[in-house]
Every structure is written in structure tokens, then in C-alpha cells.
Image (cartoon, rainbow, N blue to C red; front, side, top):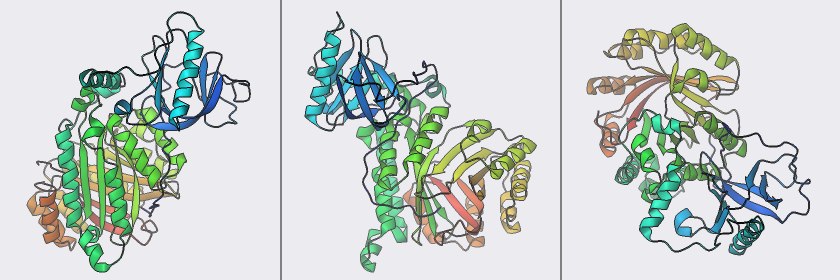
Length: 502
């Protein structure tokens, strides 16, 4: 929850490769061991599973294209085999949306390696040298280094086929939620985001003009908003993935509209590139992007997304999240280890909690890092679920939820409570109980009890085209974690899903 805004442009550097089923890399190949190479230099390579880009030192030697993290690495990061029948060619900008791109496809391999050079002449030089190596290996190569002209129909089919090869069994069998992705739905969601922003007083451009001061919070929101994919970004996402994943756009506001959280998520291959660009732009450390690599490799989620927090007091924070269902055992490997995680495990065992439905982490510029888990509470009635949630407040040493707030939760007839747990290396940070689909009477009680702003609430509800919030959350933020910009102690938050029909 601490401010992280840093308006600094950086080069993208993020990449995930799936290790399962791959032969181990030799550990005795270093940069220095590859003396007198055919060619070497810095290039940017696209990753294998979550398809983003990272800068690597490439060395072409002995019919292999080696790549390393630096020019002094003692161990190779990866190897691309160059053999007879390998195809190496320049890629048109229209296909990859990046200048100076070339590709390498080893013979009989399903994967195509996409690589970006700094300059056009560098791209041509690499393609020429790799094809020179291929030509010496016998029949089957080289292929033309200049991309043949294709019709728009065949180009689109090629792009879809390439995207389809990225689908994994996990992605195709993951349980979908919400409506299938469509570019019209994406445009609608982006429009609702803008409408919701214009309702919030401290985010409105006209308020900034009246005050005569530049709003860093508004600028932060705009940078994040630009990271949400547009229609064009989803054009090459495989159709199978588009129909099995859904868009997840939301805004959450505290009852007094002092704090807001914005979220956007969708198909992994359509969202990851701009999402990581955003993290670099706001100064996220590379160690945390590497951690996202590790978690993405571990869970390979069908949907990924980013979130930002902000407050009227100038608070700004951001991070990533996976709105997918995973086992709690797997989810507990993601937060930083410590006593808090041991206590979560103890509580979960006591109450037979086994499912995590949301996993997220902040990308703040300074530690401690915070990780959020949302878990489904057990029991087939609301009373049993509330009892296990309130026990978490006791076991995790939080102040109890006020009795009046508990009474509101006891009015819930159907089960569906979710517990939100945020931890860091220093211990527990925040604990919240999410009550699903509050009816208008419950919302009115919450606004009255929390001294809310019913008029502003109604404006926000209308702006996001929702009949009401999807959840109302009763939470406690521990002292010291408000960083003078967020409310510490007890608070209430409304969670809206944009365009939802409750």
C-alpha cells in the first residue's frame, strides 16, 4: 500500500520459459568458453510460455545459438539449435508489431523463436549469418531471409496458428468464468473504466484544472489505463483461448471514497506484454518481475491482470494478480515465507480451507512486498463461513470486526464468503471478509454505518453499468501499513465488476 509512482521509461525485460519436459541445459557452457564465435551481440528474445521480451547476450557458434543474461555469465540461459532445415527470416512489422524482428524455427520444432535487434542492419546481419551456417549443414536450408508477401487472410491464419501453439492443456481445461472475451467487450470495459474515473473527485481533470496543480495520481491512473490491451492487441490471441477466458475489469472504493483499487485481467497472451511494460514504467524492480516469472511458470494461469491502488491523500501502488482457482497449498508457495504463512496454514488446516481463488502481489519500489490470497470459506451455510472467518481475525492477531458490521454480515442468507489475506515478510498486513452480492438494503445499511456517500456511490454504480457491488468487504489494515496515505484500522470497501448483471 505504499506509493511507488516513478515516471521513468525503461526497456521491457521480462520472460518466462516452461521447464517441464525440457532436457536440462549443460552447466559448463560460459560466455568465455565460446571464444571466436561466428557472431555475438545483444538481442531481445521473446519468452516461451508467457510471451514477453528480455534482453540477452547471444553467441552463434558450432551450429548453435546460445543466449546468456550477461556478457560474463558462467552458465548458459538457453540454446537454440541450428540444423539443416532450420528456417531463419526477417519478420514483417505487421505480424509482430516490433521493428527489426527476425525468427528462427529449428527443423521439426513446434516453437518459433522471435528475436529483436536494435537496428535494421543488425537484424539483416544476424539473419544472413545464421543462414550462412544453415547452408553449410546440407540439404534443407537455407530459406529466404526476406519474408514473402502474403495476403491478409493467410497472414491472419498464420498468426492464429502461431498463437494456437501457445495453448497448454491447463489453459484449455481451465474453468471459464464470466463472458467470453470479445473486442467489443474490451472496448466497452475500457469505456466504463473512463466513466468510473470521471466520477471520482480527486481523479477528475476539471478538478485538477481548478486547483491549478498537476495530479500525479491522475497521471498514474492514465499510465496504467494505457497498459490495458486494446482491440488490436487481442487480434492474434488464439480463438480457443478467447472463448475459455473472460475479461475481468473492476473498481473498488472505500465507503468514504478515500481509496480506490482498479483491476483489469484477461487472456495471458493478450495481456502480459503491456502489463509488464507498465511495471517497468512505474519503476518496479527487476527482482519482482523475475518473481512473477517464477509464479507464472508454476501456475501457468489462463488469466492474468494488473491492479493499482490510489487514495485522495496521494497514495499510489500497483501489482499483478491471477484471478484463477488454484489449490491453497500451491498458492502458499508464492508469499514470502515467515510466521504469517505458518499461521495461515494452521488456520486453513483447522477449518479445512483448500481453495484459493485469487493470488496477487505488489510491485512496489521498496520492500516489504505484500502478497494477497483470497480463499473460499468452507461450509454450506453463511453462519459457518462467518465463524471460520472471524476465527482468522483471532488467530492472526487482528482487532475483531465491529459487532455492527458482523450483524450486517449475519444478514446474508446464502453462503459465499471469501477471506482476503495480505502478508509480507514482516507479518500480516491486512485481513478482510468479502460478502457477496449485497442487496440494496444491505448497501444502504453499510453506507449509513460507515458514514458513506450514497450520492457518489449511486453515480459510480451507474457509471460502471452495475445493479450493485459484487462484494462488500469488511477489513482491518494493521497500524504502520497506511503509510500516511491510506486509512489504517477498520474500513469498508465496495467491489464492482464493470458491466456486471447481478
